[in-house]
Image 1 (cartoon, rainbow, N blue to C red):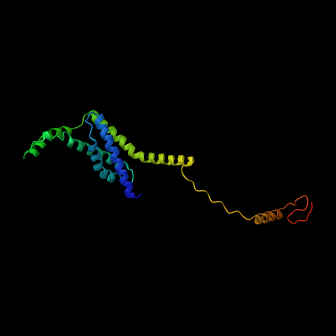
Image 2 (cartoon, rainbow, N blue to C red):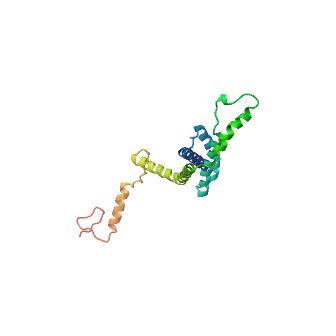
Image 3 (tube, helix red, strand yellow):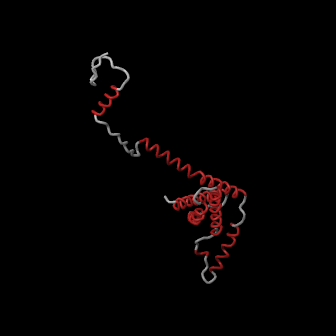
Length: 203
């Protein structure tokens, strides 16, 4: 994997984790749950920003910027689409269609862009801390899990192991000749009948 691909993967993970946790915290804090399409669109928007923020390493500043940018994008996207409906009965025909839609969307947008209350703010802070911890240590944890799984698979025999090449054995005659030289050069005299090595000495 190249450096560019690794940065893109880290950015995608940062965007996915940050946006999903921000969506959950928004719902837990008492807000309306965002739609799946809005979450996916926010992830796509936050991907390049998170990729640029994370960079080649998982620094504190880059990770914090990725998490905060993803939460900000989700809040802006949710505020801009709050109150939007696809019901055709709300869209009057004629030249005043655009002005009528602006009047319909303006109150909802103004209410959504206001400062969040205490439960909402607390939920977003908890989500930001959780996303930061997951991005800072999640990659190391995943790497450790993969290494552990690979070791377990290797011990179980699932991973094929290549047989070690045995060292070439010496001929039988060479072994006997070497043994004879060692015994002949020994500082002691063998006792017993005449040896088979050609030594006629008898103790």
